[in-house]
Amino acid sequence: EIVMTQSPATLSVSPGERATLSCRASQTVSSKLAWYQQKPGQAPRLLIYGASTRATGIPARFSGGGSGTEFTLTISSLQSEDFAVYYCQQYNSWPPVTFGGGTKVEI
Amino acid sequence: QVQLVQSGAEVKKPGASVKISCKASGYDFSGFYVHWVRQAPGQGLEWMGIIHPRGSVTTYAERFQGRFTVTSDTSTSTVNMELGSLRFDDTAVYYCARGGDIIILPEAFFDYWGQGTLITVSS
Image 1 (cartoon, each protein chain N blue to C red):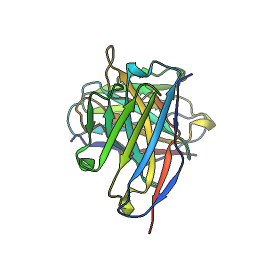
Image 2: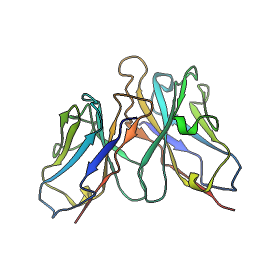
Image 3: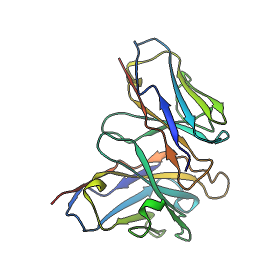
Image 4: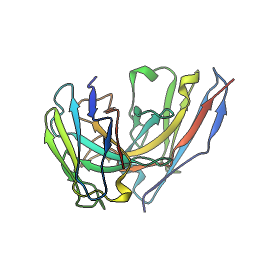
């Protein structure tokens, strides 16, 4: 099973600032990496798939990068609605699909 | 628009079983895989399994083997899951989620999610 590790666990950022979240895989997942945003009481929302492709309707301030075992999600200028928990997920080698533990982006 | 609507919250006793339904609309149900993912209170996401929309193929995470079953009904565009031998640590929100196109992009990332169903296991 591929273990996904996200860092930091919590990221404190001010509105308008840039946020960079990291995700590391225990073995290569090629570019088969997705990012999700989850707000309290809501289902996760797909942001990025294929490591860098934005999902439908996702603003351009969200960008994904990396391949192999190291990945990043960058939010270029944080808006109030971006404060949430973010999860990475690999789908290169499954079952099982595996998720990272999440990064909480807080004000 | 694509929607996945799940059945409502339930409270179950340890050892019991629970069934959750997930009704899809707004897309060709037969064209996409459906997955189940759960989230314990305050915890992260855990993948449980996948079903081909025609029900011809299912794959479950090893830790749920033997007590987790997923079925699909194309006539109602509904996927059902059943988790048996419930334990206290099965308390979680359970989500169905749409996976990849069965032909063009059969990838296991999830572009639409149900609203979630809270299952509480309590004596």
